Image (cartoon, rainbow, N blue to C red):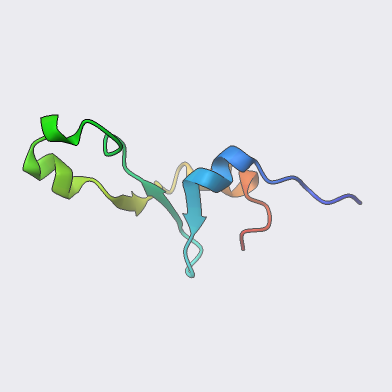
Length: 65
């Protein structure tokens, strides 16, 4: 049986933690940050993907663990 292909777009956006959860980046933190308030800048960063979306993303990343 041939190897399954990883969706490269998902591989660029998500990482799998050691516990098997999926980590993602929050939006609105790439450019034009001077217009953003300080609180919004602090809140941007990484978070975990919701449990409802995790199985779909894990199918896109077959060899991530």
